[in-house]
Amino acid sequence: MKKILLATLAAGLVAVLAACGGGESATEKTLRVGTLSDAPPNIYVENGNFTGFDNELLKAIAAKQNLKLEFASTDFSSLLGQVANNQFDIGSSAIAQTDERKKNVDFSSPYNFEVMSIQTKDGSPITEEKALSGKRVAVIQATVGDKWLTSTVPDAQAVRFPGYAPALAALKSGAVDAYILDQAIAETNVKESADTKLKVVKSFTTDVPHGFAVKKGNTELLTKINDGLKQVIADGTWVKLHEKFLPTAPVPDQFKA
Image 1 (cartoon, rainbow, N blue to C red):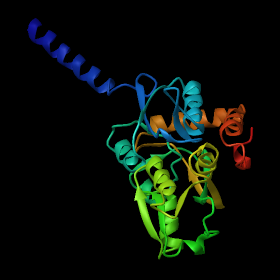
Image 2 (tube, helix red, strand yellow; image 1 turned 135 degrees about the vertical axis):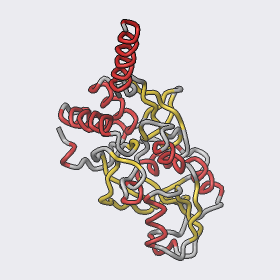
Image 3 (cartoon, one colour; image 1 turned 180 degrees about the horizontal axis):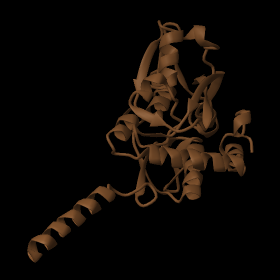
């Protein structure tokens, strides 16, 4: 009887431990962050480190909430699917929060808003969106720029790329006539392009917010990111990072300390 009682108690203890230890919490494990390596000033690699406005903001949030991060590069076209299937815990890539994307992942509170640009090579006759009609135009697949082009200039030929670097290369080589992308990245392209002169033809602000992506239902991690975001806005970190990486972009009132 004593052996049976001990066995029963042991089995019960195992069951209780199993029920209580349902995996590491967000603060206990190292969180894998999927991001891009080629889209400054928002997300890029410098001296072997993942940096840019979005990634430095996420690092600041993590410091406030005692979260450990590990960054890895991927293509934008794959990122949200990789977050949804647990390959990454967080997606950080100036991700516009659209209704379609919200079906597959959950988003943090907004930490910026989408400002898009039309970029061309210097000397191009394209001056605004109507001039894109009938032209080959580079977009990053499944982004706001992709949707904007197909809805605004439906007879333009959208040439879709998985990431920013190949799209920029296509513009420089003349394989496309224009390129639709985030304003901050477009302006960086102008500054850093030594081999080909580029220009920003036109920019337009949208009401589409950027957010960090997490797997649907991961409320613990989402709460920590949102709480940390409130902290870095309140102490002025958000503005400092914005001034460093995005000095020409407007600062919405909700992000001012």
